[in-house]
Image (tube, rainbow, N blue to C red; front, side):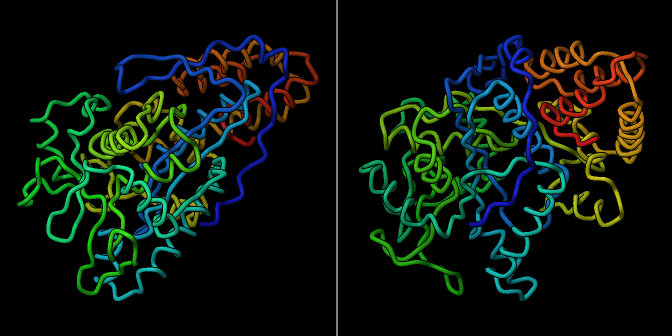
Length: 405
């Protein structure tokens, strides 16, 4: 699967880098802030799209979260290995293709390309490994084989016994009653007869009439969702990687199931921290493809909206918060972008050192982007005689916030 071309990210002055506080992130598993201080190389996995519709602002907010995280690591002089999947065969995609009469592969490629275009416009750093489910079938079947007796057959489908993992439930911290309440809403099948436990998850789905399948040592079929991400992450990042990321609706079942599968197969921890972005709402409900209450990044771009204004509108909300999109979000972001660009066009300005320190402090504190925006706002209101200030501020705002001025 081809990745997009990410932006060139400016570097931070080594002197400023040495003064940066320890980066702390909220880990869903522990329920607390944890240090993120990899040595040399940071490894990140973020769950990608199922490409049956265009990128909406909820998607953009999630990927922006982990773009900010990477920029923090890069500012500290680390290498970053970023892996993202795309679930280019799955029930929602096949259902949309059948409903519209479009070939499912053509639909997946078209929407994946639109996603890549949207991410480029928003100045998101591209993953080194951008991997589709279809191209990962051998990885999936190999991982299923490593699960041994924790995999069992229901008719011609294969399921994973989640209780083969003694740590099952530790990612989301939900009890079994709460898990069962949401499992069916988020792609699970708790009521299927023949399962050992209602929470057991599908790892290999046998062919259904009219649906694609692939030959494999497991028999013909296609991958389950959770095993797909576990297999791709283990292949490209190994075990005990730094951060598993995604939206908060993925904590259970998706991240819980993937982590359990990986732990049982390897005997090692899957990820050191599980970081989740909040949900973006519209008209009183979570923005989602299934509900159709979407504000599309591509539609905003086609209407002539500067993508940097869209990025600023998203940055104005802390990544862990649930919030609702209003047109005023964009209006305020456009005004902020205009003020920032006017300020950096001045021939002189206030020295940039204090601003760089304030940005680093805010973003080191669980990626507090709203506080970082306020720091830039404050700088734009200052007068000064430093002829290098504008150039330094441009570089810092781009490096740490990803906003091109």
